[in-house]
Picture 1 (cartoon, one colour):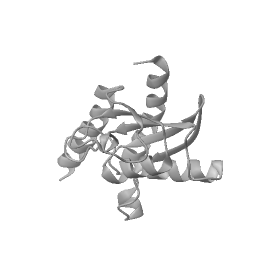
Picture 2 (cartoon, helix red, strand yellow):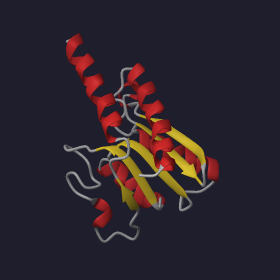
Picture 3 (cartoon, rainbow, N blue to C red):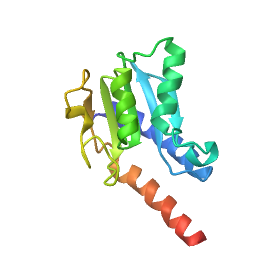
Length: 152
């Protein structure tokens, strides 16, 4: 793990914590071009009342708008939770060459936990690195669900 990967994952964690403050499952993402964050996103499914409001999709949408195109071939994605199948598909379609995630998602993770969509014969295969600040990313999720159970 590099200091650079950790630094950008800490930035993604900030967005995860913002999501938690809004009552959302704490998932955050940042898109980096070179050494600069150009877009960020956080989970907003509950507030947006929309299944598509994942952190990765929000960040990808913002990056595409900023860069003026759908190909993010010069960018990297850092996300606190292993991408689901929908987000893995968006990553492939956006041609993001490198994905770094924190915590594994043993129920819906599509970058190794349930399946690795990046290993299938698609036209684009992102480099993948998991487990960056895994304990911190997992703890954010555990704390959120613990508080949610206590409220019920």
